[in-house]
Length: 614
Image (cartoon, one colour):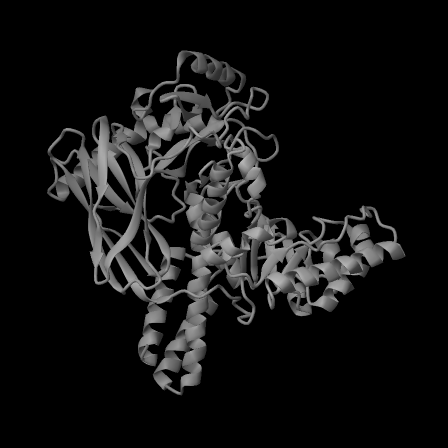
């Protein structure tokens, strides 16, 4: 398999023999086998195609070709997949609002094996000085056979793009034995730990919190394999006061000790506005709650995972929270009595604490199979509601409080427990529960918010909750997280939910899944990103999750301008606003080109701003 080795080191003999034995036990890597067969013909064909395109562009002598490609795409970019949506020699560009993070992407193609290829990003200069940017390589590694398309477990493994790394050698991919290894430094020496062991063969041997496992701070030299594509991510970040305009720079590509180099042009356009917090589409007065179950870390557990190193654990905790905010997971934090001391940090980072998730402070009564609550239980619930009200009035006065009680509970449970919700309703606190029809049929009037089990566009299931006034209403489970496809993650948690009238993203689950995609049986690990000793790792689907929220924020700002234009008395502004609303109304929720939708919303925003003289 030399044609697809991508220059990665073969595993050490001991580990390789174990991996080889595991491959014999699980020889049905059907998707990986199909990928290998396809590569045998696809890679030489890609080489001929790229060579012809370079010749037509007057670059016949180029050793490396580069293609600008969309960062958000349904294309699974592995080494043998030609970037049909890319542009040879194209400018790597993005458009972003003030305060926003936004990614761009490109792929490199080499006609021979190349080691220690350096990529250096220049300063991006523009009207406001320098624009911040971060360059990473997209790591293609072995994931479950259902990777990219589902959260269900499947037979075997396949190559899947996912991790965004500064140092691609942090993860070693052994193509001979279909295995992933983590590089862990100890006493100045690198050791490799098998990540992808099947369940039953020490599948949890890898500890991502090991202090010897960490990525580099900036991009390191990479290897390019003959006739293979390799993808890179460039993420821009505009400060909230960044001066609008175009910022330009280059990425220089040079092989170590080779004086010849190539340059990739880079451009980012910073828009003259900030994005607001997201709001509902049909219910603009309702803030859109953007989160994910399990997003909030437990600081004490992080310290424990970091070997009881308090300093390192607290740094991991802070990095985790900052990562949530930077990825627009604005409501991903919770505030409870056992973590109230983190409130100053939440405020420092900038989290909006209204609404805020919390604890109902009511004991678990265990009436899972029905029955009636006793007087003592009701009084205990009433006391919990009073304590809950007092706690949140003290620490986040004026905030809307969302508290959960139970999970996917049946009709008997709902019937038994709905009595005490009145104590919370009286205090203005909303009680919610993730689940299905039993919640509406037996307690719809009593609940205050609802993460429904189902697809985000299940309109009829969400309708009665909206009509009762139980907001926010969100979805989970159809499908769960776990897909690495950034455009699908973006669509499901963004415009599909938004245009379907939902006011909450609260899927299951976030970053508590294993690094090993083979550790479970029914489901693969449901993750948006991965946790480690440094906080959270970057992944392409995590970037997609951020883009989903930011799509809603662009739409929110557009609608706010439309309302302002209608009130302005300026006929041209009013017409521009109605055209924008017309555009949004005609979007097909399940068939959108999200990159085009974002561009259209920006164009409408700029037109209306111009008509309003902003």
